[in-house]
Length: 161
Image 1: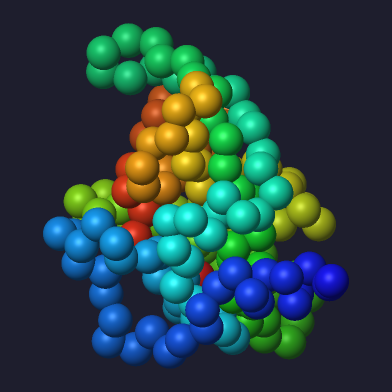
Image 2: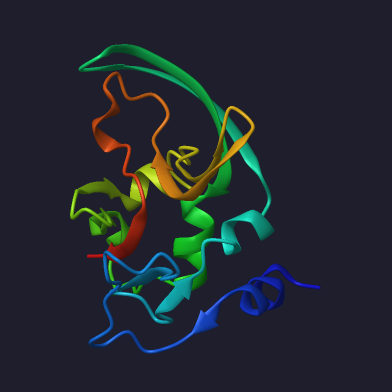
């Protein structure tokens, strides 16, 4: 089975205009939209069906150093399924930023060049386990950050801009 067909069975493709995940809705999925060809909703279980990627991170927090091992799906795998739009020109996809928003409204951005395997290919995760224990909702984990500022808990939206 091709990766595209396999991934299509995992994700429900819908139009996202006007849909937002409510902060009090624990069953809401992650809306992936913006400048994409196929807006999707990713359930909390969907990343667990993609190839598992483990990463170990260590970063400074307000409470001191934190170290943990996370397991999850690559953020790039989910974004690639939604198919970011390109415009004609040299490497125009490198203009894209990815805005990841948590249930509490906290948001961070990454560049497509950081995630795309044809460029940096950083192993940024939509994590579902921390130190071998399920964490309930999906958390963004960005390896290599010296501070945990780009770790987003309870991801509810991913926008390609």
